[in-house]
Image (cartoon, rainbow, N blue to C red; front, top):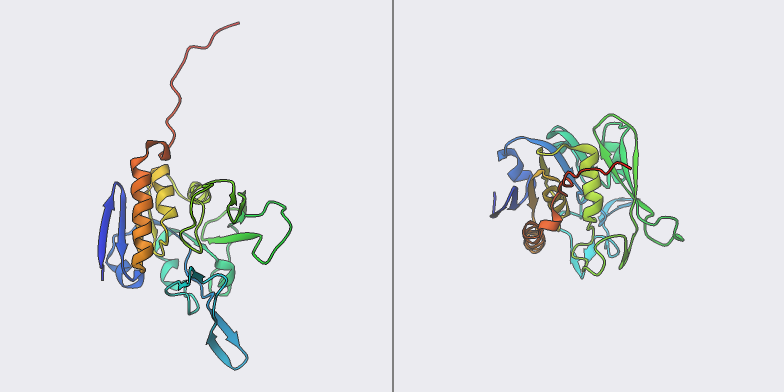
Length: 235
C-alpha cells in the first residue's frame, strides 16, 4: 500500500513497505539499493536474538525499521536486468556467485579503527571487480563537506554516481526499494536516469524528498553539459 507519493522531475518517491508496493510497479532496468541487512540481528548459540545494533543500526537513538531480521535478497534478484546490492558481504551465502563486485574504499590508507575500511556491493553483471577511492570518515570527506549526516547508512552521492555509471545507461529506470535519505535518487538526477524510490520510514522519506527537491532545483547538480565548440588556433 502506497501511503504517500511525490513526483519530482523524473523521480517518483513512494512511502510504504517496498515488498507490498513493488509487485504493482512497472518493470525497471535496474535495482540499486543498500538494504537493511540485519545489523541489529545477532546469532546466539541457542538460536537467534535481537541485538542492540547501537553502533550501526541506530541513529540519534532511532532504530532503522527492518534492520532487526536477516535480509532476504530473493525478491530482488529477478526484479530487473541489473541488480546492485550494497552490504552483500553480509548475506553473500544467499546470493549467486558474481565476478563483478563494486568496492568503495572509504579510508584510503588511514590507520584502521573500529569501522570497516570499505563497503562492498554485489552485482549480477559480468565483468571484473571495480574499486573507487572516496574518503569518508566522520566530517572529513572527499565530498559533501559540512553537510549534516542524515542517515546512519548514508552513501555519498559521488559514490552512487560511480555505481550508476558502472552498471546503468543514461535514460534507464532505476528502483531503490530501500531509499533511505535518497542518495541514489540525487545521483540519478545528476546522471539522467529515471528514479523510483521506496522508503518505509516517514522521517527518512521526508529527508529524501527534501534532498531530491533541492537537487532538482540546482542546475549545477545535473549532468555537466558538453563544452562549447571553439576554433583551435594553428601555431
